Image (cartoon, rainbow, N blue to C red; front, side, top):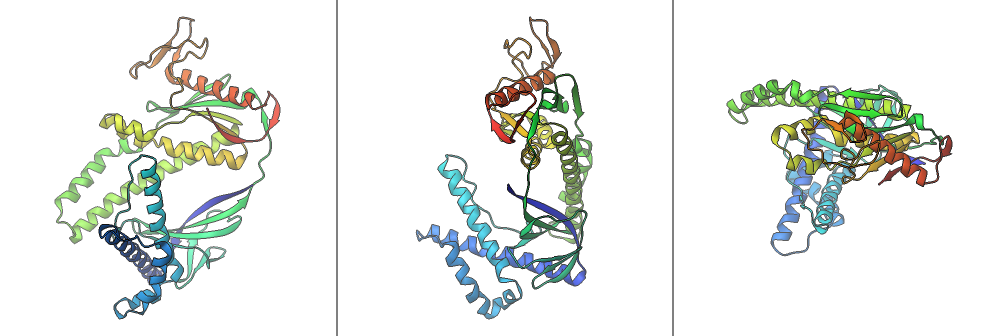
Length: 390
């Protein structure tokens, strides 16, 4: 089975190379904004919106213009990828509009945000050095070996630091899963505990790190400092860099925690039952404090990690629908009762009395095992892995 895997590393450019990276990112931003402006003008004037092919054919003409001769210094395929991103953004907007969702048409890009560019080909890798066409050989901190065939390379700037991401196509051969009840678990995500993991014998509560909550006072202080500075002044840019650096630090901490936890879970278990959460709806209906806690937890990111890691390692992931009564149903007798959010303990007339997250995790585990058995698997039987939804 062929899968795509990304390898992300920190770039170590010298001063001259860093200037070239900024020049490439700025050129892609300019081409993207110009293409977006042309599409908006055509729409407002009732004309046909130019296609990706037509906008790509304009690039050689732009390079021949005297005031835009600096585009000659940029790799041609890098500029084409910027227009491809614009075309893809419009395709996604039309798809959402067709499905009755909010369209979310693309916006103009500004300097300092989304500073990135992409090579579809031409990049060569020599140990810890990457050859980038029209930039040169740039060193990067290679923390793990690359596997598979290189498909594309993306360079992005985050808080004055450059990163390189290689997307490779690799072939994985997941071993058949030895389906046994001891290696089947259910996971209930929450705020009080980040995750409650229930198996047939044990229950584990994973503490919620609350990265944002622990640094909220510092974030508010930096935000106040930024608001007091004159916009676009030197001190304003310094305050903005400090605020962005803290946000990036929290984001990296959260991703590191989720990666380590998801990898440990997938490696040690064969079937994982989870609830398919609509985080967007939860954020829209929740009060401000609860919405902040949900965003800080990173539930959607964690579920996405579980999904692709199960596919790569050949494990089963069963997603229960958002209407599955995991917290209302008794895991012992199946009786249902209303469970408001403030009720943290589940008590049933059959004698069951345990934490609501523990009861929900047991229900998710039972649902996953029932789906797997319906697919023809039996305890201690060998089955192929996959992603299933209730």
